[in-house]
Amino acid sequence: MANPIAGPSLPVAPAYSLSNVTALNFPVLVSVPHCGRDYPPELLANLNVSPSHLLRLEDRYADRLAASAIASGLPAIIARKPRAWIDLNRSRTEIDPDMVVGMDATQAPHISKKVRGGLGIVPRRLHGAGNLWREKWQHQHIIDRIDKDHEPYHLMVAHLLEQIRSAHGSALLLDLHSMPPVQDENRRQIGFVIGDRFGRSCESRYAELAGIHFRLQGHHVQTNHPYSGGYILERHGEPARNIHAFQLEVDRALYLDEKLCEPVAAVQSIADMIRNCCLMLAEQLTGRDQLEAAE
Image 1 (spheres, rainbow, N blue to C red):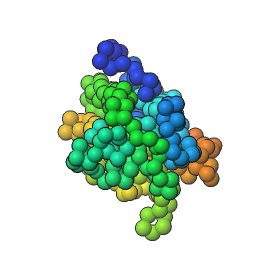
Image 2 (cartoon, rainbow, N blue to C red):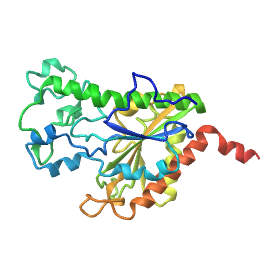
Image 3 (tube, one colour):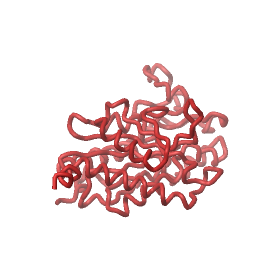
Image 4 (cartoon, rainbow, N blue to C red):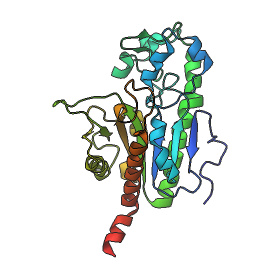
């Protein structure tokens, strides 16, 4: 088939890397939007806090969790720029006026709860650290980040999902994230959270099958609590068109060291588990599991 990323309107931007997008042999696309570790010098130069605080914004080494899926041929798009630079899981309208020169609340009349909390399309502050930036950013600088880093990522995701749907009849976006250790109301450690915007971004059976998959591996799984998914699912999940999307949050304690900073050996087994989930979903999407059962 033709190269799905060809065309002058869809350049391969330095904001992301692509894997296995030429043949598109599987109907599942893996997206890892918050793992970027390429910090631009101008961002570091404007820091009001220690650079170590920015690690809290990262889905630390979540790209390693996609490695087994990529090695097995599943298509993937992985962010290179960090969340501190641009948050790919926010709408371009979610600009925090408190961190932009000459901008005030009247220019952003519908400020979301996340923006008010300091976590807009460019994060402004972190709990316990305060304001991240010494100086406010120029509005044009924020717009440039959106145009050069945010929008190209989403255009490519949309393009690949359309190509996958054309090739296979359906497509599923697995939006891969990691979360700090969190417990449920009964103080049970949650290993995985599957978010499908309460059924709006994905046909329920795919999210349910993913949950069963991780439970069978001995993990506690919750759906839509405490994370139901954000802008990426809102923009790309279209179940009525057979384009499905769900968010997978992975407890960082499952694959990082005690400081939640560096990967440990268990990262391989978690990555393999995610690959197997993707392959299972691919069979469901193509109907191969039903064909095998009928033989």
